[in-house]
Length: 239
Image (cartoon, rainbow, N blue to C red; front, top):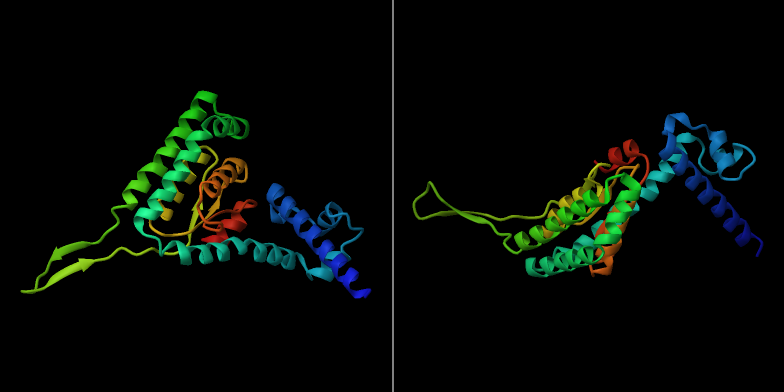
C-alpha cells in the first residue's frame, strides 16, 4: 500500500524536473543551464534527483524529447482518419476555421500586438492576410486532382495522381507569426496531411490561439498541433 504513494511522488518529482529543464532550456539554451539550476528550479535540494531519474543531462533532454514526440504521434493518428475525407469535406472544415478566425479577428489582432509589437492596424491586416490563406487553400483543395498526359506510345495515356506526403512540420517566424502558420498549415490540411507547428519561441501565443480556434471549428483533435520551446532542439527533432 505504501508503494503507490512513493511511485506517485517519484513521478511528481520527475515531472517537475522535466518542466523546469524545458523552461530553462527554452529561455537560455541547453548549454547554458547547469543541472544544479534545474534541480533548484524544480524545488529539489541537490543534483542527485537528476541522476536518480535521468542519469545525466542527456537523459533529461531525451525525456523532454520523448514528450515532444507525442504531438507527432497524435498527428499520425489523426491523419489516418483525415486522409479518408473527401476534398470537399476537408474544404468545408477549413472554411469553418476561416469563419472562426474572422469572428475572432479583433481578439487575435490584439494578442498579436501584445506579443509581437505590431500596430493594431498592422495586426488586423495580418489576421486578414492569414485568414485569406485558409479560404484560398480550402477552395483549391476541392480541385486536388491528377493530370493526363500525351504518351510517347501509340494507344497509351499517362496519368499522375497527387498523394499526401505525411505529417508536416511547420516552422514559423516571429514577425509574421499568425499569417505564416495559416499559410503553411492550410496547404497541408487541404491535401490531407496533419501538422505539427513549431512557432518562434519569442511569439508562441498566436499559434496556440489559432489551433484552439481550429478545434472549436471542428477540426479533429491531434490534426493540428503546436510544440513550443528551444527552436534548435525542436526543429532538429522534427526536421
